Image 1 (cartoon, rainbow, N blue to C red):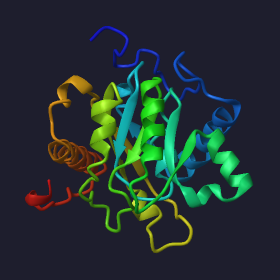
Image 2: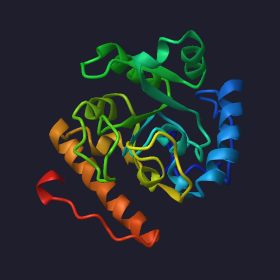
Image 3: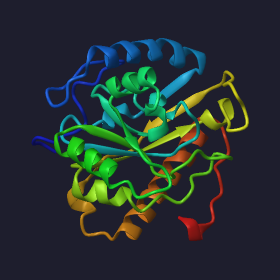
Image 4: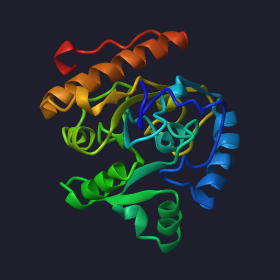
Length: 240
């Protein structure tokens, strides 16, 4: 497919950092990404598949499952373009930490409420050509299963983004489950799915969109588990 939102990204070739002419990375972002590539990538034996599916241009919303605190780092390390993140507002109360994560493209969102301000900020960044990740389950998984997705993700994907990209992280729940204070070593894999252009999802209702996207995430997860020599996870068909 040609045009301003073409993919696969022809510029992706290994671990790269830097902007693409749409949203530039700042020094903090580049520095921390290089740091995490060397530390997180090595400590957890990180494997990344299909990063060629990063859209070369255009606003993209990445809809990802949520297994651990590491997920924002894990899902973006292999991407050339900078990522934007929603982070709970309590993390911004510390002046030092709040300013740090702002420099890493994070912006606050109130949990357990309809935060229209955060949604508007996400839409603004997407319409400006940025990439935004959404952990659409709303909380970390306890057992690795992908929970039903929150319906609010449909609005961003259908109204503001040129692309919706499914992403699955597998193994993080074993390395850093909710019951552990600190992570342990292990293998973690990240796999990107084929981007879906907005024209293909604009006609769907929010319920139809989240059901479709949940099914794609489940399919990617089980294909990835087979790739990792792990048995597929069985899901209740009513939840897919």
